[in-house]
Length: 208
Image 1 (cartoon, one colour):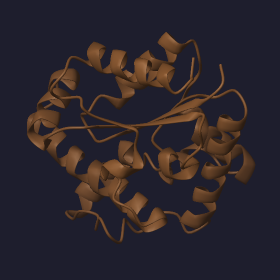
Image 2: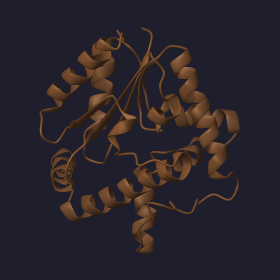
Image 3: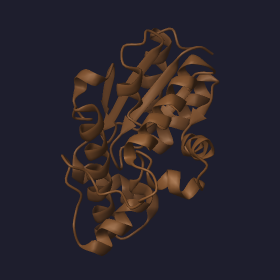
């Protein structure tokens, strides 16, 4: 396969489910956890440290934020928890990995502000999955089975961390439709339908 599909998804919008399903339908690779692992290898640090500085930091960052009783500033982001390497170092290495994926095997990349990194490449499809906060919350609660208030705290921290990362590093709003070819309210449709839409759009861009 040639070409790459980037998927930007707000919390609860189904990115972790849609991304792998799209990759399977297109017969290509799904790139998510392997990205910080490659970054860690190049920087000579533990994978856990690379994951903590990844664009998807909210997997664990919300617990740190919740324990401090405050939320990240969407414009300024969260203060990095590591003193060994700065965020710019991690960002540049992550961008390098994303570009290598696009130049090499292609596939589906979840997060990492990949739509901003790859920009107007003709062999890329940029997708945004979003939806009203309350519907995203309900979807996340249904998938996880966890208490709603716990999931709500995680959602707020996750959304703020991701928005802060993109605004700080690329000076754009990650939810702005102009950065994407396809924007879907994935809370209003079955995820299988969302997968169908993304796959058809990818084929329309010549990615198949």
